[in-house]
Length: 116
Image 1 (spheres, rainbow, N blue to C red):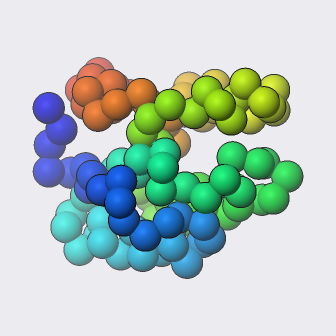
Image 2: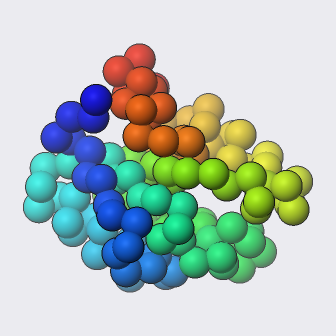
């Protein structure tokens, strides 16, 4: 199970569309002492999954700058099936330590427990 160092966001919260939305989540994470923020895929605007928009880069860079991990939780296959660039970025992100795309919270907990 996840520990208290992960801020788990509800699926029905405000959309994450720009860096200011990321800053709101970062502020909430800092206030709770979290090291990771788990955001359901439904919360991200579709622009996040279109790399040419730059939205994903802006959002993830904010998390890196504040030394927080970001987990995108849920099925992103409809986006990765449509974009080989996104598919490659997801795979590369999952090899790193700051941004993970996980199917559910159990996978996130397992990766964190393994030292991710």
